[in-house]
Amino acid sequence: MAKLIVCLTGMPGAGKSTIAEGLKSKGYDIINMGNAVREEVKKRNLEPTRDNLGKLMLELREKNGPGAVAELVKSQIDSSTADVILIDGVRSNDEIEVLRKFGTVKLLAIHASTDTRFDFLQKRGRSDDPQTKEHFEERDNRELGVGISNSIALSDYAISNIGLTKDELIETAFKIIQSWIK
Image (tube, rainbow, N blue to C red):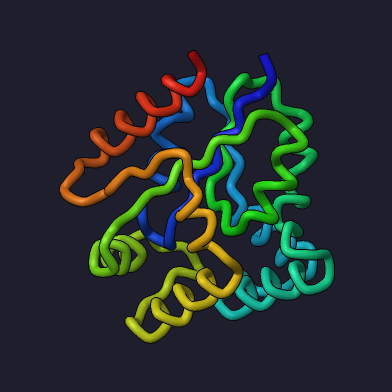
């Protein structure tokens, strides 16, 4: 069987990383697109601030095409021995096209309200998480600008992360992915 590449897409704070973390124990390999950009920031000796990460993401896309961030994770996909790889944080159809070269791609969108997402991001504590509504809206607009709404709209399945516990969210995603394997 070809590798199943499950792309988690959704606005920042919707629950993508929660699902990825929760499904590690199922033997899936997890690749985080944001971490690929964070690594690139580190290589350039820049601080992993919201501004630096946002600028670099846009710069990479401008220089190397709209699928550039997916190009950064190709070696991780190549070296994976797992049958299922979760890609956390796909933001555009161009990235999806890059990933299709490595296996069967399925797109799982996660939706959550803006209030839920903002609250979660404030608590999460990554260096680039927005601490003000203004920064939150800036980040949303940047994500929308690179085409995330298209990948959400074209998803194979969508989970509404409203009123779900963490365990329910993870279990829902697991059942969906299992149905794609069969």
